[in-house]
Length: 452
Ligand SMILES: NC(=O)c1ccc[n+]([C@@H]2O[C@H](COP(=O)([O-])OP(=O)(O)OC[C@H]3O[C@@H](n4cnc5c(N)ncnc54)[C@H](O)[C@@H]3O)[C@@H](O)[C@H]2O)c1
Image 1 (cartoon, protein in one colour):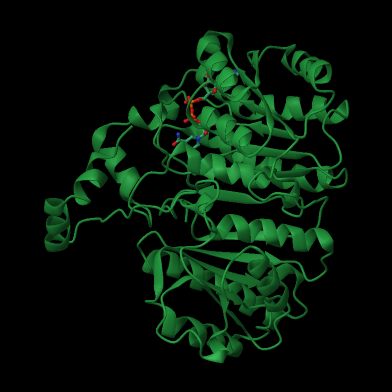
Image 2: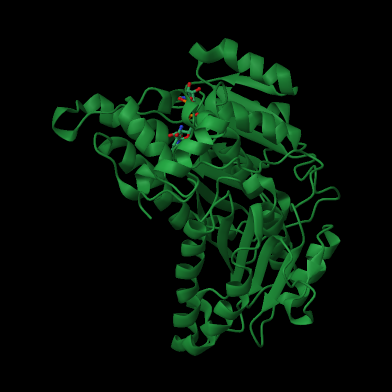
């Protein structure tokens, strides 16, 4: 679906009107194309005194082809930069927060359009003292405000990295930086991510980070699922695309286009987990990546909602993923190094009028991730969720105009996201390199004001 307003404001007449009336000004987002450099310009890398990450981060950025500049060396004065990256792990007291101001203030207006801001910290729950935990938690406010302030498609994130890491932590930090700095994260901003430990391996080619992986995508016939199936195939995976029999033609089209296989199955059928497990066992002997993307809405205010609407939504969106996980994990079809990504929604974070059933199911998806990630972590499987905001699909095209416009504009990007933005985020969480990310809920919402 096209965003006519965004097209208009990019015209000469539109630009004048936007300036005169102070209207929302959706920037052109920097999205990923294979082979793109990670950033549109050099990265400025700073660190608070005593930081533990600046050195490894500098090395991995350089290895990734980024020109890294040191503000202390004075080499960056007046230069426009592609990213500001700051190691805040040395901040152990609120008075030391001043170092963040000192780093960001001179360069606040030097970040190129589509540039990136990334701050690295220590998870407050893993800090040595309450003072350190307080200061580390404070950094959230800075990055969320930068996300709202810098504009022009610049995103800002905070990445908490465990101090008790191992090789997987380093690989997870690299995969996270490669995602956040690149155009893959165009519609992700104001997020707080956690990199811990897990089962992880770096790819031989970061342009094909899913080489050799077998990936299942539910709800793959259209919308986000179809975009995801294409993207996972682009990044090297063999894709098993699943959808209801009624969507068989569209599903076959997607599967044929990407050289994947199609499975026509209603996930709510009692024998669905068993049939799916048998298909995966027969065709591939295993599955490395499972994405629970299939979802439905059956909107009505609670007083007018019949029980069927409630039951169907909970069943498709929440109970089916639970049942499928149980069977795939129980039969060890997904095992050590496996990745499961579930699709939640900002409705599951903020709630929504007319969506008590949907919001319950999507909050449940977050509950599933929080409760099950530690259990599956013990088996080397990473479980995370994405929570999309307003994404341009058939689902959002049906929303009445005024509500739709509000949904589109009420975020730091002043526009809706595209299915590919959600797909890129899921793809990154599915990488073998991302095993140290467990139990994260990553919003793909352009830093929506809802539920913020
Ligand atoms: N579009 C958005 O703005 C948005 C926002 C937040 C979350 N989401 C979530 O993202 C996911 C994808 O959304 P979308 O916009 O692409 O939706 P969509 O309706 O375009 O696609 C969903 C797909 O799931 C399939 N499906 C539904 N029930 C199924 C079942 N029982 N068995 C197998 N397949 C089934 C449908 O046939 C369809 O192809 C959903 O979980 C949705 O809740 C979307």
